Amino acid sequence: MPAHLISTITVLDPRAWRNFVSRVAVAFAPHRGKGMLRPMKAAQLTGTGRGDRAVVLEVPDLADLRCWYDSPEHLALIAVLDADADLIPTARES
Image (cartoon, rainbow, N blue to C red):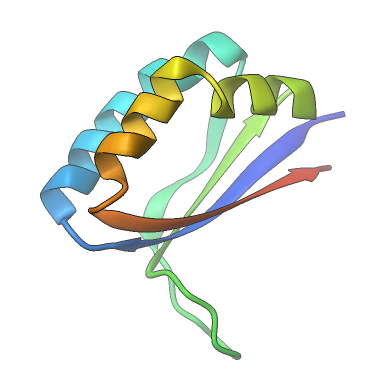
């Protein structure tokens, strides 16, 4: 069953964010994933949500998603970006 990573992102350093986006696809590809919604500007319609951008990634199942999310390549990217963006990732089976 396909799984999706849905993230809202508040970018604090646009240059660091562009660097992250250019490198994350390379780390994601071996896990049979694809981008469903590229990092685009987002707008909160109601409530008190966070994030000025949104991204949706799809993989064949939650095991592939967890394997990518916990991979050394992804963890290294997150460590670099940690001070430059606030990410709120959520995994969902579809």
